[in-house]
Length: 192
Image 1 (cartoon, one colour):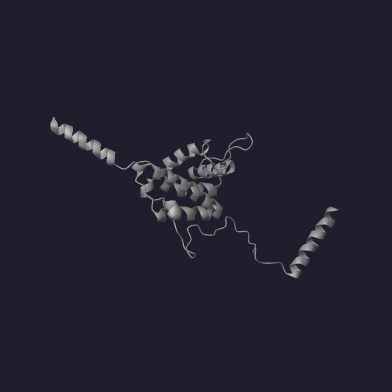
Image 2 (cartoon, one colour):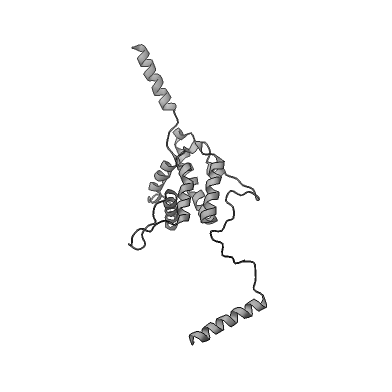
């Protein structure tokens, strides 16, 4: 009987010292519930932006516009959800810098640098929440600790769409005259 009590006591101590199995996805859901709380001092538009990013990370449909129906996700946003799935299933203490950088680069490739910056900001808040819970064993906010170099930044400059236009190219005189003539002929054709 004494051995059974000691074994139960040992099992209880091990359970108390065992790492919390809470995942990044679960923490993100927890942080999301507090996002629209009145005690949260973020600006309303920032809260809406963060909520949109969280919806994208989970692959949820967009909110309806003015009481309409929910809108489906674009392929780019679904790619963002697919890139987040492995990170969402991990414990925050188990996520390393390489995994986070790969996630942010994937988001930058499919959705642009601005969206990747928003994702980084949301994840930084999630890691702050993880650091508050001592059972998770998170000592450092890995997202805020990410550092890049000029040749290898954390979030690279990526454009969402390639337009084929060179923003640094000013039109030549001939190109300018051609454009003006085309616009003038279009106006004459429409009879204005």
